[in-house]
Length: 357
Ligand SMILES: *Cc1c(COP(=O)(O)O)cnc(C)c1O
Image 1 (tube, protein in one colour):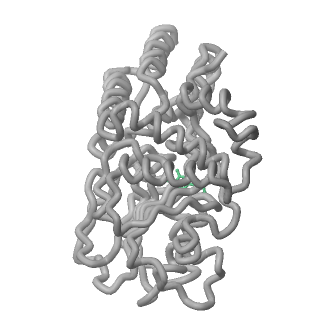
Image 2 (cartoon, helix red, strand yellow):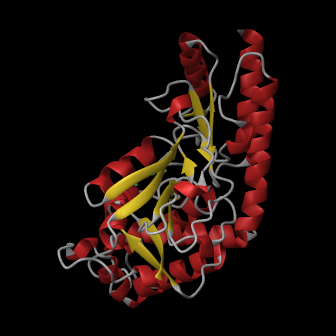
Image 3 (spheres, helix red, strand yellow):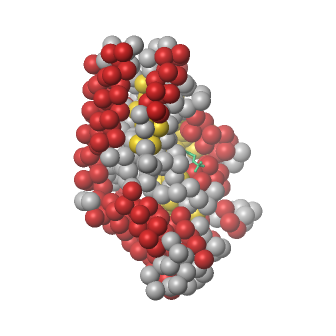
């Protein structure tokens, strides 16, 4: 029996997508073989790749002067590829909103001078810091933000005005969850395993003028130009992961696209936060305006009770509600594939748990 899986990542996929993949698993279309067994240069796979790109372009309204790359190495490799490819003046601005920002900062520091212009570390990353725009360096090579903070459950709802400095956003846990204006960004990157598909493929959406500026010393595989010129086929791409991502894009498109998904996500998040705010047992530490729609954190204030909650929830088919190991408590990741019924069942269980404890 399938459970409601609240894992932060790899995360749940739409059942419809899994069933379609199952149906096509051993014999894709007329190919007589699985997508896993196909040459990435075959006509069948090329079509999958082109469809995936076209659908993502449509879903996110990505303008023609942006390239879509399907890479490997996770969002974590982008922490390094971004500074290696964008380094010009040798400095970049960062906003530190948690563990993923810190990892990105650490990698950039190996390549250029990092200027952290704002941080929310003083209050355990429970808010998105105000940005003093006078602190933005006019000659920075980029400004990096973590759009949605998977571990602490915060998200940006507006971007600073950086003028001509490109904004680079890690959207690993929020891509396709709400409408974003791609033209406001220089680079958007996301590991697929949260809101898109299985682990193994990383989406990079990059403005064309940011490609082709890497130093000669940058390894071929780490140069965006390599992958852009080869249409993400410089070497063998993660074919099966791209295929599943394509099925997810089709599912999204069929269900009204990102706009419709955003509406459902807003409803799901509101239901859960409203209940938490009304509860005497559970609380969420995040400043309301900065609350993530994707990752909802909560605590009882008592570690033993938290553990009991996670255990009893699991017995009810509400799985992976334990918070990140660095922060404890609980976290419900309610990505696109989590149906409203899953959130309703979670809330019903929380009410019952509160009444019984
Ligand atoms: C999960 C996550 C990462 C790490 O992604 P990998 O694909 O495992 O490298 C980076 N940033 C954010 C915001 C994440 O949620």
